[in-house]
Image (cartoon, rainbow, N blue to C red; front, side):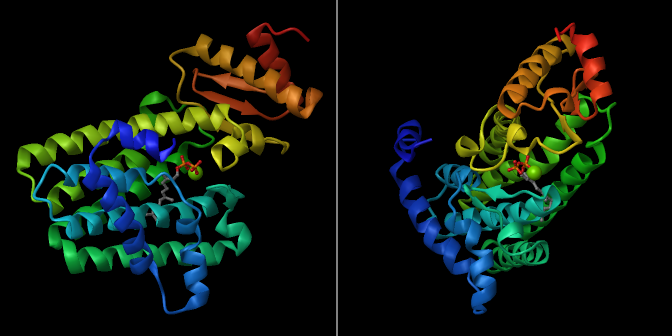
Length: 305
Ligand code: FPP
Ligand code: MG
């Protein structure tokens, strides 16, 4: 989304002034005297990004006392955790593209990506301890733990054909909604909002976090690399075995309809012919693998040969 469009949706001038200052502070806090590490750990910062989490922090901060320096530091602390998690996530996913540039694990390697992520996480903790206080340090640490729990569940369920929408909700609660909730809460705390306001904006952000991740997952299923700035499902297809879990179906027939459209699209794009196959379980699982599976999928869908 264009930043001007966002500015119209959130017409709070101070927020956008703070976002400009946030960028400078983000570079300052993430910098290392080691120029080699600096190049890697600031690589994804330079690549851009939506800055959704810091915007939530700055928005929550607007509900309080106008202590902009502290609110901006809260925004930097959450963005550094998010960035650190992306370096790690791209290693886990063996991703090739992030924010429209080559991912760090491809440009450098997995080891250096993990180290760059660790570095940003360390800087986040240091900043929080220095300027935000113990309660914020504790909140960031427990949120970091929630991210790891959510991500671990995602890996656990990756090839589990019995996992359902509730399981998916637990995954996204941990890996996404938790940090977005904390982004707002930290902004409210930095601005010394009262308890009721802090709870209200945190709850709003928590719900927004679910919506954010479900939207991200739908885009992952339906967009191309250029639009996404990273490989979506269609771009990642091409191996002999490929599996995705799709959380967004209400029931099996909806999943079947989607699978039919996706298969058509993929076949048109890649001309895989019979190498492409698919299977649906419990309305939440779509797997592309062997020709035998394609046969079963076609039977299930009643698809024409
Ligand atoms: C991106 O989402 C990834 C996350 C939201 C969380 C990643 C969390 C970890 C790697 C756990 C470790 C956490 C830290 C703080 C080191 P996505 O994978 O759905 O989307 P994308 O990869 O397509 O952008
Ligand atoms: Mg991922």
